[in-house]
Image (cartoon, rainbow, N blue to C red):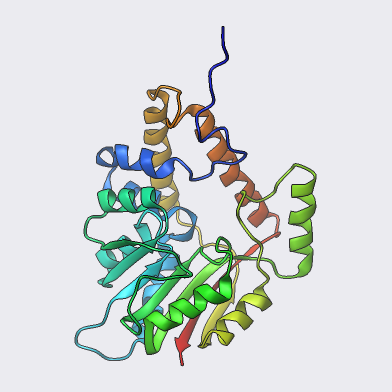
Length: 284
């Protein structure tokens, strides 16, 4: 018998979120609201973090009877933008390069306007936004200076940048990732880049932002959020188990690969290879 062909996702070395948007969109109606938000936020959108982001926006956007819109650059499946809109009253707009992720976000959170676009070439007017969110994007884009310049262009003078990501604290982190990948044992998902904290801070300043708050440390625990994410995994796994293995289909092998990528990242954080930085900056 001929071998069963690999689906286009599990044929890749590391699928991570490759097929997840489509699967998530298909099962959205089966998810409660909290699980839906947790699924879409993933690792960069836990509630304590988003509360800190919203508090910073309140502090630095200035008094206004009608606060302007906030753009979430690299909005993914729309969860952070939806959470801020739903629970903190922030008027959010999402920009995301993946067509599948945009479709999933529109199905999960129709209240959030979503635009397909690249962080390095934002389809946004100059100075049209009061703030920009860059959550978990710095470790994924190829050109960080360009992305931060684009964010600055889209935000009015005096506006706010809220950025969070996982970074290396010294060059040994970058060396460890290179050596592990060369040995065939990657410690971070494919496509994830280790930026150094000092370089990120310097690039933010060079792009026309002044850092007013910053902090480095582990994510804050949020058991309810973790429970919601696990519920999503159960629903998606049930869906995948019923999906025929074939070209373009989400299969169990892809699900396992995505989980391995997530586990590797969690181990890198727990082991101190990368640390989370959160900063707020003003546009000058």
